[in-house]
Image (cartoon, rainbow, N blue to C red):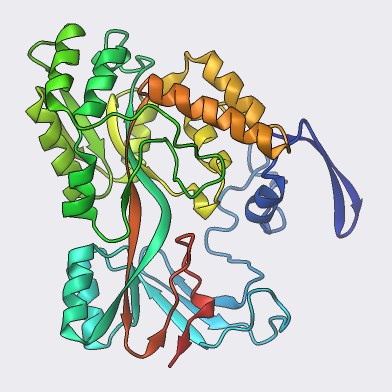
Amino acid sequence: RWIKKAVVKGPYALRIHMKHEYPLVLYDLAVYSRIRKKGTYDDPSKEDGINRNAQQLTLNGLGPYKVKEYVPNGKIVMERFEQYRKDSPKGFPSIKRITMRTVPDYGVQAAEIMSGNADWAFLVPHDIAADVQKSGRARHIQGFSMRIGFIILDAAGTTGKDAPTTKLKVRQALNHAIDRDALVKTLVKGTSEVIHSACNPVQFGCSQNVTKYEYDPAKAKKLLAEAGYPNGFSTTLWAYREKFVTEALAGMLRKVGVKAKLRYVKGSQLKKSENNNKVMMAFRTNGSTSVPHVGKSIPIYFGGVNKRNTRYVKHDEELFDIIAKASSTYDEKAQAAHYEKALQRIADQAYWVPLYKFAMNYLVSNDLAFEPPSDGMPRLFLAKWK
């Protein structure tokens, strides 16, 4: 989106010509400019020349570990790369071999840790992690996360021009219907915090100077009545994770007359349903790929330079323009000012129901030394045996 053209300057060099200034250019180059298998973009057997399966099982990398075995949805076995540069900012890893397994059930994860069959787990619910800590057979370590939870609302009417969420008062009512404090204190717990802006407060540009919708079910009912729904309405609340949270959300909505039927699906199915314009309301999360800058969150959902995921606010050219200005300047003061204006408009229009900042709970064996990162991105190459 920001690259005008790239010119090869030599066997190991190229020059990129940009369409405009872009403050996250170095991050994008580091993360998205991956090593591609030869032939990926000039495969004569493909209509467009791109072999999208070229790297499905052929793994490349330059990090402190190399992949020795990969079983999709099963496990990854990584072995220390002995020739890894000793002066790397990451440092030379201490642990020789790491096996990562997919274990969907939290209870099984806890049992594996307590029995000594596993040494580390993350994203564990607070109550389960705290119970394991009491056993003394493993530790519950709390850290911070860049991930936030929120409810997306179809303000643009993709699910129908008369969808209730196209009305501002309905969206405001939905914001007042949710008891964010109760969610954090009784369900998410730990280092979780309530949010009111459409971003994580630790990110650059995440202004808190926005309209805040306090929990007020009476006001929510009044706004619904003023919008033409005195008896509420029926809808589906889609979700793909945190089932215990989405069940609570559905219950809160029902208290104000919004009869929300919970539909819990896989993330891929939710995305497909969104693309088919079937989702009026969905619980979603975003971790900004652990980048402490709102440029990795707001533009994804609200447009600007990148409009690929703006189906729910596709009518708001004013908002697009504000975010485009923020996304195309290196001036940090200008960025902050534009993002604040964008966040204020998002809140005033109640495009989202911001909920909370995630907590990060780890279960760690008593034999492993692991420090929780401040950005929620666990760096296992820094872990060591005690």
